[in-house]
Amino acid sequence: MTHPPRNSATHTPTPWRFKEYGDVLEVQGIHDGVWATIAAFRFADLGLWQRANAALIVRAVNAHDKLLSALKGLLETDHTDTLLMADAIDAAKAAIAKAEGR
Image (cartoon, rainbow, N blue to C red; front, side, top):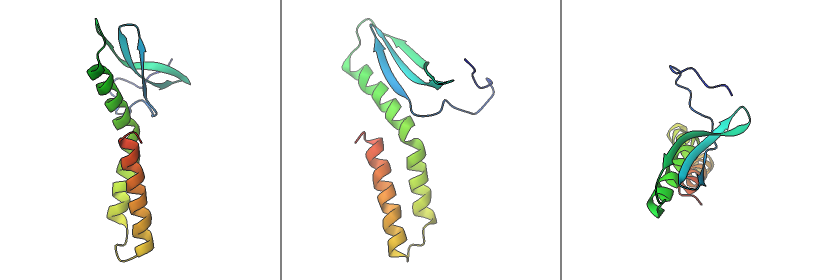
């Protein structure tokens, strides 16, 4: 398995997911075509808040690029062009839905 150099600003590509293995909760991403651990947390008893936090991390990471693109699209759109604005607003709504897990 290859990893980016330690001084690299490159993050693990999306999508990310989280999985539970007994008392371990892992956040995973794809490296060399297979799911690999990004971060792992061990808990004596995994609670709902640990699962909720892992789900939030994964949703935020997976939605980041789409949210950024939608916001840039809104800023770059000719606000006098109704059709272009409607498309930009639809993209923003879709990005928000993804971030919210819908």
